[in-house]
Image (cartoon, rainbow, N blue to C red; front, side, top):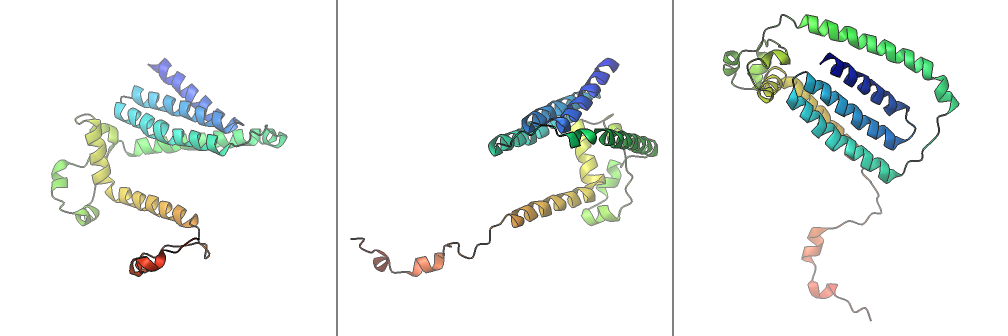
Length: 215
């Protein structure tokens, strides 16, 4: 098991590096797909089969396929690696190492800080009648993995998201909604000379007067 985990971790790091180092955008997307496959394999080895399937269906099946389709339609020119990019490689490597060390420290603090946290009991959830009661209630945060000991993965994931993190989930949905509306508004064409359709004027017109002889 340890050999498989180390192998998939090495492949994941290699594919992630090739995503940003490849000069061909099509190859970058293919390496990104391989990176997500390795990540789903790591999640599967940890015992979370539902999350592994979600990784493949959501990221590989939807996002990466869309990226690959869009890149092939745009016909982006492949540019060779410049000398300026090669000169920046040592600095980029140092920044990546510092970022990895910081992520490791954050994960260690997160795991140690949540070691002795109690779970949100089902009896306390039944006492809350609406969303305002959930906001006013002093919630006890818990680990997702500890819920899996006595429930299924889908049930534990839903119970944690829609009870303990209900407010954060609504905030995230509002952020996504505003981002979608902002992208639509920024690409909306406002041409004053564009022809429009007036339904009311078309309905009140006399049909006999609208037919003209082209001869």
